Length: 259
Image: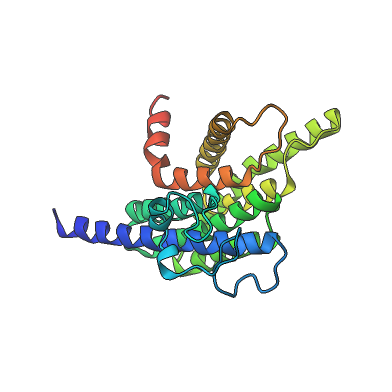
């Protein structure tokens, strides 16, 4: 194995560990926020069923959940599967970005975005809300790295072109809602798409939408969500964006080679 591959493997391992820990922290913080607890970013972790303070061996991301078979070791009640899902999402997202970008400045930009996307996905899951503060933080992250990476006019034009995708979708949604009298898409989802357009090209935006729709359909089929039931779309947009960044290049190259 070459030195560069060893460094990348080492980087991805620790990114996965960090991502799992981040997912665990964010899941706990968002759950407390959704329950209206004051100081939701502070305090020891505890079981949601019995209230027992959790020890260090209860808080090892992924491992503790699997070792205890998804149950609290104090009261035996089931731990929500969302805890494991959050940890795995964080681990896979950061490891995938590490594999895509390697040890580079671009990795820092995308890792920060992935953390924000995970946070807003959890808030959307819990309360059907995508906080404007998280969206503004994602926009600020892009602006900061735009300067740090020395990007210029070409990237500005690319972002403007990419914004045409959510703008067109917004127009379609407004027309549909006007004609049907039903909500077609949440305002937070549209705003999230505009934020993603600051990071992705127009073709990547289309691929993100396609991936998000497919992931949503698969999730609905697996979980038994019937037609007309509410399903937060933010997590699927976030997952679609990360998948597009990590794996979308070859897909788009193949597609454009057909013409």
